[in-house]
Length: 384
Ligand code: SF4
Image (cartoon, rainbow, N blue to C red; front, side, top):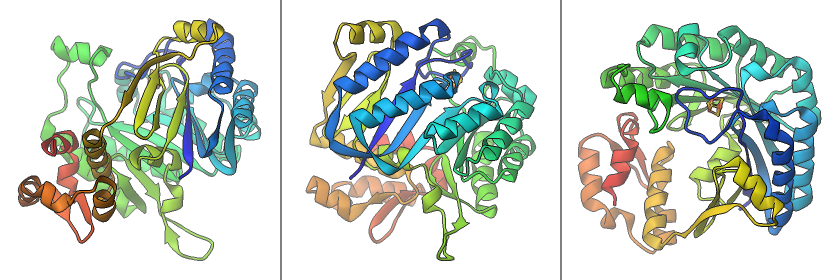
């Protein structure tokens, strides 16, 4: 199975109020970071794996100019076997990129753009602490398309305090007017350590009530399905489009890279805080740009942890990752991989979840129902 390469660019213009991804706002470290990143690639050179995806996320990779991005891709190609047809994605923050920069990104080897729109609504954008307006987001999408990026994904967030079904539908409608191939619709979460989490703890904000959040989730599924977007993971939707042979298909519009995480494929993560998985081993880098640079300057890999997953852990992980996807857990594959009989081993849990309408059991699949998708974490925990 081909592997995925993830590169974490740990810089943002400003931190958003809800975000717990590792990033800093000190742009003076860009050059030293890029040199360190290139050293990390050369030190972890790997000729045993072939890569069919490269994903530059963060942080805000689009704070780096196209020449730097091109340079990083070139060093990645020298260090790893990146296949000619690889999906090469760059995450873009709408407040950071003009038309010329999109055109240059395209020349640098990027063939897929994912834009963090989050919302087009000024009130929601202010609440989330985004640096851009709704108009900026629309302009960024148009520019990316004008620059020739056909493979375009947009990220949106819902479940924001005071958000109504009408205002969420407005965001969804505007998003699909651009006909992106891919949409990620994330439910707002309050992650420990973020400003939003602190506001919540200190009673400065009231989250949207659970029934309303559920309604927005159901609205998302219904609206996107009515408009030709196929849900393939809890938060991810691919546009159904005609293939050359005239068949309808949404598969080719999925995020090939993110599928690696959900399907137990090997992936290597580079940059501060990035995680790697080479079954059964998982390891990760320190979440500190300065330490990352110092380590690599001194010829050391910037690792901060490693774990070897035992069979039980791998099994739980396979359940969690399988349930995230609409196809669910493929039972015969699971039985073969772990030498168990899924239906027997988890019979009581499966019976209970099925009776509550939270999962569906089919001939060879076990998948969450749309109601079950709202409770993924607690359902996965029931299998432990
Ligand atoms: S959401 Fe994106 S732009 Fe905002 S702080 Fe997080 S990584 Fe940076």
